[in-house]
Length: 455
Image (cartoon, rainbow, N blue to C red; front, side, top):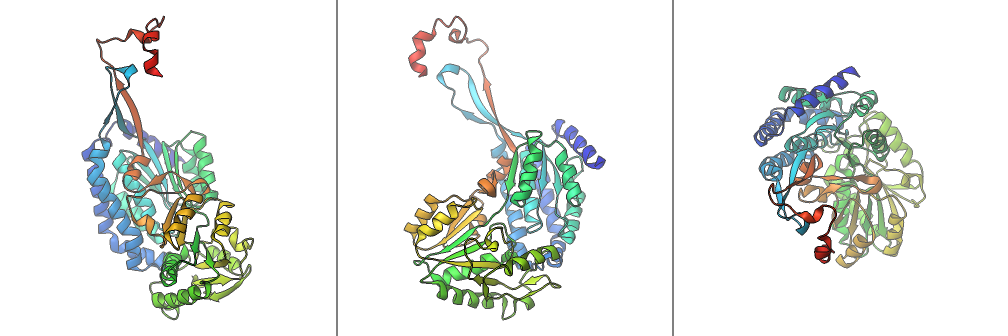
């Protein structure tokens, strides 16, 4: 598309002027972004409710608060993070000075998904601004009301030659990916992540891929069952399960399974009432297409022991736990991305470890049980992140990296790592103009005198 190509050209020209590199400029743009979001905050809450039935409190906790914290962290630390850092010079380069310069990568493309549309667009944008990059933003068409408000925020706040915003479907994504960018930050499914990576490979563009996958939840016999049920239900029903790090399936020890399910059912009522459909706090599935997919998974085997109700017109699915699932059931073949929890029993933790290791590496892993076994599970499995005796909450600590591994993604962000995602660390060596080291020149006659020092 011509508009996209021309916009990237203007952004490239603007970046090369050096206008985005000054620390005070970056701070000013971060403050402007924060003021604009605050100005439109109530509109964002209303749009999130219209698109996802997401209540104000959940929207603040999972969307706005994370964005505000990220902007605040970038503002507080961008001066220090941007400074060049002296490092030691090795013997063979003395008396040279060496340092590492933080250099903006250039033009960023940020593609955000629909499930946390505000958070997952503006959080990486804060890092791009702090790093000194320009940015092209692309949100999801599946949350059109949020999309409209975010576009207004961006266009009221920034010149298009600095930060540009594009709306549309796959044709717009394809046009954006056809352009050359200096960094692509993508959040979405592993399948779409492969498309992004293939496009990036044509220009050797670095990528940060925040993907997903089937994140296991393990409730062992040493768990506090009440706590495990409460925290698992919360993690699974947050945004109606449409969370990339939602517990995707449950392995529960045979000795505590019935106690766990009884507690889970009780906490669903405590959170959302006897009929979650009537609760203003319980979100909806994003689209009819997603509803059809989830309904198909629910009917692919097993039986619902909790929930199971749905309403296609309302895009509503009750919090649902399904028993009678085997590791080869269809529902275990793809990320669920909804409030449906397959439940499987186990006797020995070794069984679960073997199952997890025989599949793609998940974005998150949750273990409820004693600390000794938790350390064993941590040591013997690989995942983007892990919570012991909790779900979701590792993303709430900005000092922890958030990112995937293998099929669940590459690269990480939050706090300093968001800044680093859009930054190149350039090695700089400054040699003395008048001091010369003859050892480095042919015929290398001095090498034998210092060879032992260089080993």
